[in-house]
Length: 99
Image (tube, rainbow, N blue to C red; front, side, top):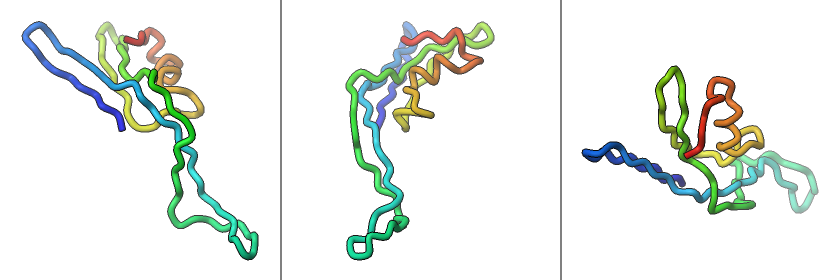
């Protein structure tokens, strides 16, 4: 679960996000104990395999002379890249700077 907060105050907008993230492994198949045959599971099983207390989830992104705040939530990785790497590798976000 991710927590992202945006609060508007008279002096501006305050943004915050948590930094903990968990990596899961999805199990789609299992072996039948008696026959040894591999069977597909009706419902995938997600098992936590790692975690970090220092993930970046809050980013400042400059596009078309305008600065936007982006808070990520959901998957910890996309195509084996952290969200930090995804934001910084996006062609249209080459000027993205992490907060």
